[in-house]
Image (cartoon, rainbow, N blue to C red; front, side, top):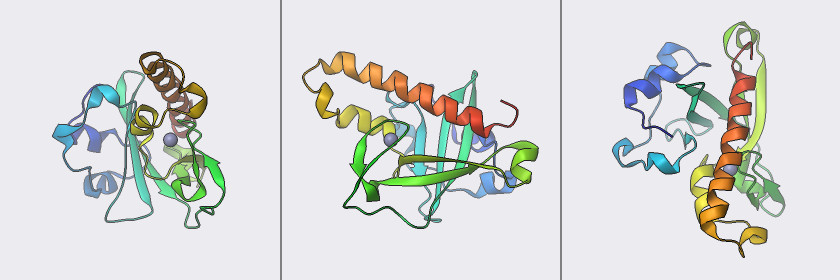
Length: 165
Ligand SMILES: [Zn+2]
């Protein structure tokens, strides 16, 4: 993705108030983010444990989505799949996140849910943990394919969050 500044990130949020966006904790070391290896920038809020954020380029502009993780997590003994990057992880490593929809729908309490890597690090995971069934293939082919799929899925998710799309 193209790089973003702190100001651009704070302004990009579509489903929280301006004061919430101004007050949220950004990832540290924004200058060191390898943007070319990120389909979306995702992070959990260290000061508000159930909160998480995903920011990406959508329709040529930055769009930030505020997420809330479910309070109950799945059992770590069962396997679960992130529906964005399709990594299979233990239940404790995948969270059900809800995003309030933007605009009037969100003001009426409408939300969209998705199972996502609990740490919101899908971009890192597709580059470090290639799924077993793809391991005999060339990583130079596999990673761009996984990245393209991830981009499509998070784009679809954002489409559901942004009212009217
Ligand atoms: Zn993921």
